[in-house]
Structure formats: C-alpha cells, structure tokens
Image (cartoon, rainbow, N blue to C red; front, side, top):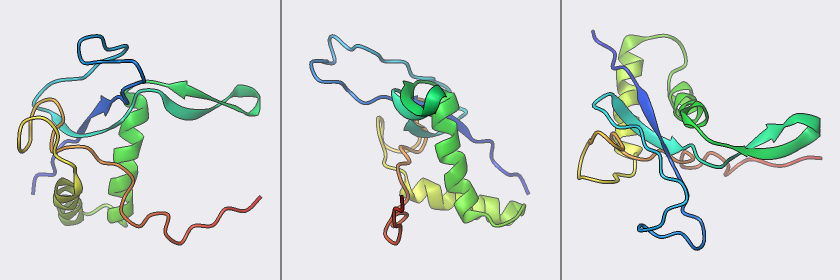
Length: 123
C-alpha cells in the first residue's frame, strides 16, 4: 500500500489597500507535489518575552495540515493514513482551477469543523 506524500503551500490574507495589481506579498510554492494549502503568511505566533508576533512560511502552514492528519490518525497505520487523506481532500476548500492543481493542491484546509465547539478558555 502506498501512502501519499503530503506537501503544503502557504496562503496569504489580502491586506487592506492591496489589489491583485498591487499585492504587498504574494509567494506561492507551485508543483505537482502540493497536496493542500493552509494559512502561512502573517500567522500570529508566540514570540520572545511573552509577546506575540507574525511569521511567514510553509514552516507555519505545514503544522496546520499535520495537526489535521493527527486528529484523524490515532496510530501509524497506512490504511488510516489513506482514509485521512481522502477525508481532508473532501474537506478542503477548492481554490484555483477546479480539482487538484499545482498551486493549491486539493484546496485550503482551515480550522476543522467543530474543533472549538466544546472548548472553554480559563485564565
């Protein structure tokens, strides 16, 4: 059984005042290995001195997709990995050309449905 390789492309949020003709920041990885896309530009991250900052890169988009897989696969199992891959394909928001493409893969993976429905914040 072959388990697919997962490559992730980062997406950006368009900032106020930007346009398609005058983008402030557009960087996209392109290639047939791209399976999914996730937010990876100006991502809020913990910084030094107990503050927060913003970071950009596939190093910030990839953990979002990896976490989605981890939520679907309890232990190493090729069959479960294939099921998880198909599940995420179905959940991905298709962007760009219809179907899988070399820019967005199967599409954008945001926060999984229902993840925070039962969450509570304590201080």
